[in-house]
Length: 276
Image (cartoon, rainbow, N blue to C red; front, top):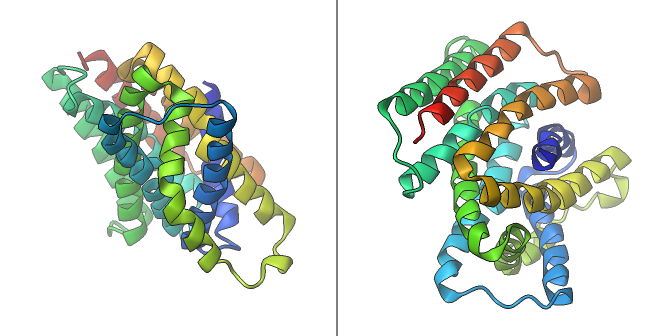
Protein backbone atom coordinates (compact mmCIF):
# COMPACT_ATOMS: atom_id res chain seq x y z
CA UNK A 1 0.00 0.00 0.00
CA UNK A 2 2.91 2.37 0.71
CA UNK A 3 4.23 1.66 -2.76
CA UNK A 4 0.83 2.37 -4.32
CA UNK A 5 0.48 5.65 -2.41
CA UNK A 6 3.91 6.77 -3.60
CA UNK A 7 3.23 5.79 -7.22
CA UNK A 8 -0.09 7.66 -7.14
CA UNK A 9 1.80 10.94 -7.21
CA UNK A 10 3.83 9.99 -10.28
CA UNK A 11 1.39 11.12 -12.96
CA UNK A 12 0.57 14.54 -11.43
CA UNK A 13 4.27 15.17 -10.75
CA UNK A 14 5.24 14.14 -14.28
CA UNK A 15 2.48 16.33 -15.71
CA UNK A 16 3.92 19.34 -13.87
CA UNK A 17 7.51 18.48 -14.82
CA UNK A 18 6.87 18.17 -18.57
CA UNK A 19 5.54 21.71 -18.50
CA UNK A 20 9.14 22.83 -17.98
CA UNK A 21 11.43 19.95 -18.96
CA UNK A 22 11.57 18.01 -22.21
CA UNK A 23 10.37 14.39 -21.79
CA UNK A 24 13.72 12.90 -22.81
CA UNK A 25 15.66 15.02 -20.32
CA UNK A 26 13.11 14.35 -17.59
CA UNK A 27 13.39 10.58 -18.12
CA UNK A 28 17.18 10.63 -18.17
CA UNK A 29 17.48 13.01 -15.22
CA UNK A 30 15.14 11.09 -12.91
CA UNK A 31 16.96 7.83 -13.72
CA UNK A 32 20.37 9.45 -13.25
CA UNK A 33 19.50 11.05 -9.90
CA UNK A 34 17.94 7.84 -8.60
CA UNK A 35 20.85 5.82 -10.02
CA UNK A 36 23.50 7.83 -8.19
CA UNK A 37 21.59 7.48 -4.91
CA UNK A 38 21.11 3.74 -5.55
CA UNK A 39 24.84 3.31 -6.17
CA UNK A 40 25.70 5.09 -2.92
CA UNK A 41 23.23 2.87 -1.03
CA UNK A 42 24.72 -0.31 -2.49
CA UNK A 43 28.26 0.82 -1.70
CA UNK A 44 27.39 1.96 1.82
CA UNK A 45 25.70 -1.35 2.64
CA UNK A 46 28.43 -3.36 0.87
CA UNK A 47 26.07 -5.32 -1.33
CA UNK A 48 27.61 -8.04 -3.45
CA UNK A 49 27.19 -7.88 -7.21
CA UNK A 50 24.22 -9.73 -8.71
CA UNK A 51 24.81 -13.13 -10.26
CA UNK A 52 25.58 -13.14 -13.95
CA UNK A 53 22.43 -15.17 -14.55
CA UNK A 54 20.35 -12.30 -13.12
CA UNK A 55 21.77 -9.59 -15.37
CA UNK A 56 19.30 -10.26 -18.17
CA UNK A 57 16.32 -9.94 -15.85
CA UNK A 58 17.77 -6.77 -14.33
CA UNK A 59 18.15 -5.35 -17.82
CA UNK A 60 14.45 -6.06 -18.46
CA UNK A 61 13.57 -4.20 -15.23
CA UNK A 62 15.79 -1.28 -16.28
CA UNK A 63 14.25 -1.08 -19.75
CA UNK A 64 10.72 -1.42 -18.34
CA UNK A 65 10.49 0.77 -15.25
CA UNK A 66 13.64 2.93 -15.40
CA UNK A 67 13.55 4.07 -19.03
CA UNK A 68 10.58 2.76 -21.03
CA UNK A 69 7.60 3.59 -18.84
CA UNK A 70 8.83 7.03 -17.65
CA UNK A 71 9.73 8.13 -21.19
CA UNK A 72 6.46 7.06 -22.83
CA UNK A 73 4.47 8.50 -19.92
CA UNK A 74 6.25 11.86 -20.16
CA UNK A 75 5.73 12.00 -23.94
CA UNK A 76 2.00 11.34 -23.54
CA UNK A 77 1.53 13.78 -20.66
CA UNK A 78 2.63 16.68 -22.83
CA UNK A 79 -0.79 16.54 -24.48
CA UNK A 80 -3.18 14.68 -22.16
CA UNK A 81 -4.15 15.40 -18.57
CA UNK A 82 -2.91 13.39 -15.60
CA UNK A 83 -6.54 12.40 -14.95
CA UNK A 84 -6.84 11.00 -18.49
CA UNK A 85 -3.63 8.98 -18.15
CA UNK A 86 -4.67 7.71 -14.72
CA UNK A 87 -7.45 5.62 -16.27
CA UNK A 88 -4.81 3.68 -18.20
CA UNK A 89 -2.99 2.94 -14.95
CA UNK A 90 -5.98 0.78 -14.08
CA UNK A 91 -4.57 -1.77 -16.54
CA UNK A 92 -1.26 -2.08 -14.71
CA UNK A 93 -2.35 -4.88 -12.34
CA UNK A 94 -3.73 -6.77 -15.33
CA UNK A 95 -0.50 -6.31 -17.28
CA UNK A 96 1.59 -7.35 -14.28
CA UNK A 97 -0.38 -10.54 -13.70
CA UNK A 98 -0.41 -11.35 -17.42
CA UNK A 99 3.38 -11.16 -17.68
CA UNK A 100 3.67 -13.17 -14.48
CA UNK A 101 1.43 -15.83 -16.03
CA UNK A 102 3.48 -15.87 -19.21
CA UNK A 103 6.60 -16.38 -17.11
CA UNK A 104 5.06 -19.48 -15.58
CA UNK A 105 3.91 -18.22 -12.16
CA UNK A 106 0.25 -19.09 -12.69
CA UNK A 107 -1.96 -21.35 -14.78
CA UNK A 108 -4.99 -19.10 -15.43
CA UNK A 109 -8.49 -20.19 -16.31
CA UNK A 110 -10.28 -19.00 -19.41
CA UNK A 111 -12.27 -16.45 -17.39
CA UNK A 112 -9.00 -14.75 -16.49
CA UNK A 113 -8.43 -13.87 -20.14
CA UNK A 114 -12.09 -12.89 -20.55
CA UNK A 115 -11.87 -10.32 -17.74
CA UNK A 116 -8.47 -9.19 -19.02
CA UNK A 117 -9.87 -8.58 -22.51
CA UNK A 118 -12.96 -6.82 -21.12
CA UNK A 119 -10.86 -4.46 -19.01
CA UNK A 120 -8.64 -3.63 -21.96
CA UNK A 121 -11.72 -3.00 -24.10
CA UNK A 122 -13.11 -0.54 -21.54
CA UNK A 123 -9.87 1.47 -21.66
CA UNK A 124 -9.86 1.40 -25.47
CA UNK A 125 -13.44 2.71 -25.61
CA UNK A 126 -12.62 5.40 -23.05
CA UNK A 127 -9.54 6.51 -24.96
CA UNK A 128 -11.36 6.64 -28.30
CA UNK A 129 -14.33 8.52 -26.83
CA UNK A 130 -11.98 11.23 -25.57
CA UNK A 131 -10.72 11.80 -29.09
CA UNK A 132 -14.00 11.59 -30.95
CA UNK A 133 -13.61 7.82 -31.39
CA UNK A 134 -10.30 8.17 -33.19
CA UNK A 135 -7.23 6.49 -31.78
CA UNK A 136 -4.84 9.19 -30.56
CA UNK A 137 -1.08 8.66 -30.66
CA UNK A 138 -0.82 9.63 -26.98
CA UNK A 139 -3.22 6.85 -26.02
CA UNK A 140 -1.10 4.37 -27.97
CA UNK A 141 1.91 5.58 -25.99
CA UNK A 142 0.03 5.05 -22.74
CA UNK A 143 -0.97 1.50 -23.73
CA UNK A 144 2.63 0.62 -24.57
CA UNK A 145 3.84 2.29 -21.36
CA UNK A 146 1.47 0.17 -19.25
CA UNK A 147 2.57 -3.03 -21.01
CA UNK A 148 6.26 -2.25 -20.53
CA UNK A 149 5.73 -1.30 -16.89
CA UNK A 150 3.80 -4.52 -16.22
CA UNK A 151 6.70 -6.47 -17.67
CA UNK A 152 9.15 -4.63 -15.41
CA UNK A 153 6.97 -5.17 -12.35
CA UNK A 154 6.63 -8.89 -13.04
CA UNK A 155 10.33 -9.46 -13.71
CA UNK A 156 11.34 -7.39 -10.70
CA UNK A 157 9.00 -9.36 -8.46
CA UNK A 158 10.59 -12.63 -9.58
CA UNK A 159 14.06 -11.30 -8.84
CA UNK A 160 13.00 -9.89 -5.47
CA UNK A 161 12.34 -13.39 -4.15
CA UNK A 162 16.08 -14.07 -4.39
CA UNK A 163 17.73 -10.66 -4.17
CA UNK A 164 15.36 -8.53 -2.10
CA UNK A 165 13.06 -5.74 -3.30
CA UNK A 166 15.28 -2.71 -2.78
CA UNK A 167 18.33 -4.50 -4.19
CA UNK A 168 16.50 -5.20 -7.46
CA UNK A 169 15.57 -1.59 -8.21
CA UNK A 170 18.97 -0.32 -7.03
CA UNK A 171 20.88 -2.68 -9.33
CA UNK A 172 18.52 -1.94 -12.23
CA UNK A 173 19.20 1.78 -11.78
CA UNK A 174 22.96 1.19 -11.54
CA UNK A 175 22.90 -0.87 -14.76
CA UNK A 176 21.19 2.05 -16.54
CA UNK A 177 23.47 4.69 -14.96
CA UNK A 178 26.34 4.58 -17.50
CA UNK A 179 23.80 5.39 -20.21
CA UNK A 180 21.45 7.86 -18.53
CA UNK A 181 24.00 9.95 -16.60
CA UNK A 182 26.06 11.26 -19.56
CA UNK A 183 22.94 11.64 -21.71
CA UNK A 184 21.16 13.63 -18.99
CA UNK A 185 24.12 16.02 -18.82
CA UNK A 186 24.19 16.27 -22.61
CA UNK A 187 20.47 17.11 -22.81
CA UNK A 188 20.60 19.52 -19.86
CA UNK A 189 18.45 22.56 -20.75
CA UNK A 190 20.09 25.95 -20.84
CA UNK A 191 17.40 27.68 -18.78
CA UNK A 192 17.92 25.75 -15.54
CA UNK A 193 18.33 28.94 -13.49
CA UNK A 194 14.82 30.02 -14.55
CA UNK A 195 13.07 26.79 -13.58
CA UNK A 196 10.25 27.34 -11.06
CA UNK A 197 10.24 25.61 -7.69
CA UNK A 198 7.25 23.40 -8.53
CA UNK A 199 9.12 21.94 -11.52
CA UNK A 200 12.14 21.21 -9.30
CA UNK A 201 9.87 19.62 -6.70
CA UNK A 202 8.22 17.43 -9.35
CA UNK A 203 11.59 16.33 -10.72
CA UNK A 204 12.72 15.50 -7.20
CA UNK A 205 9.54 13.52 -6.50
CA UNK A 206 9.69 11.33 -9.60
CA UNK A 207 13.44 10.78 -9.05
CA UNK A 208 13.52 9.95 -5.35
CA UNK A 209 10.05 8.53 -4.70
CA UNK A 210 8.62 7.25 -8.00
CA UNK A 211 11.92 5.90 -9.32
CA UNK A 212 13.49 4.56 -6.11
CA UNK A 213 11.72 4.50 -2.74
CA UNK A 214 8.35 3.38 -4.09
CA UNK A 215 9.95 0.25 -5.50
CA UNK A 216 11.50 -0.59 -2.13
CA UNK A 217 7.99 -1.25 -0.82
CA UNK A 218 6.40 -2.44 -4.05
CA UNK A 219 8.86 -5.16 -5.04
CA UNK A 220 9.12 -6.37 -1.45
CA UNK A 221 5.34 -6.68 -1.23
CA UNK A 222 5.12 -8.53 -4.55
CA UNK A 223 7.84 -10.94 -3.43
CA UNK A 224 6.19 -11.69 -0.08
CA UNK A 225 2.53 -11.93 -1.10
CA UNK A 226 2.81 -13.05 -4.71
CA UNK A 227 2.32 -11.07 -7.90
CA UNK A 228 -1.32 -12.06 -8.52
CA UNK A 229 -2.50 -11.13 -5.03
CA UNK A 230 -0.45 -8.03 -4.20
CA UNK A 231 -0.62 -6.40 -7.63
CA UNK A 232 -4.36 -5.94 -7.05
CA UNK A 233 -3.60 -3.27 -4.44
CA UNK A 234 -2.80 -1.08 -7.43
CA UNK A 235 -6.52 -1.05 -8.18
CA UNK A 236 -6.61 1.86 -5.75
CA UNK A 237 -4.00 3.88 -7.64
CA UNK A 238 -6.33 5.29 -10.32
CA UNK A 239 -8.65 6.65 -7.62
CA UNK A 240 -5.77 8.18 -5.67
CA UNK A 241 -4.39 9.55 -8.93
CA UNK A 242 -7.71 11.10 -10.00
CA UNK A 243 -8.01 12.74 -6.57
CA UNK A 244 -4.49 14.18 -6.75
CA UNK A 245 -5.05 15.43 -10.31
CA UNK A 246 -8.20 17.23 -9.18
CA UNK A 247 -6.79 18.67 -5.93
CA UNK A 248 -3.21 19.52 -6.93
CA UNK A 249 -3.61 20.35 -10.62
CA UNK A 250 -7.22 21.48 -10.70
CA UNK A 251 -8.02 19.05 -13.51
CA UNK A 252 -11.59 18.08 -14.25
CA UNK A 253 -12.41 14.48 -13.37
CA UNK A 254 -15.40 13.50 -15.50
CA UNK A 255 -17.94 10.89 -14.55
CA UNK A 256 -16.76 8.81 -17.51
CA UNK A 257 -13.21 8.82 -16.14
CA UNK A 258 -14.40 7.66 -12.74
CA UNK A 259 -16.77 5.08 -14.22
CA UNK A 260 -14.10 3.70 -16.56
CA UNK A 261 -11.62 3.36 -13.71
CA UNK A 262 -14.25 1.56 -11.62
CA UNK A 263 -15.14 -0.91 -14.39
CA UNK A 264 -11.45 -1.63 -15.04
CA UNK A 265 -10.99 -2.25 -11.31
CA UNK A 266 -13.85 -4.76 -11.32
CA UNK A 267 -12.32 -6.53 -14.32
CA UNK A 268 -9.00 -6.83 -12.56
CA UNK A 269 -10.78 -8.31 -9.54
CA UNK A 270 -12.11 -10.91 -11.95
CA UNK A 271 -8.63 -11.65 -13.29
CA UNK A 272 -7.42 -12.10 -9.70
CA UNK A 273 -10.21 -14.55 -8.92
CA UNK A 274 -9.51 -16.72 -11.94
CA UNK A 275 -5.74 -16.28 -12.22
CA UNK A 276 -4.91 -19.71 -10.78
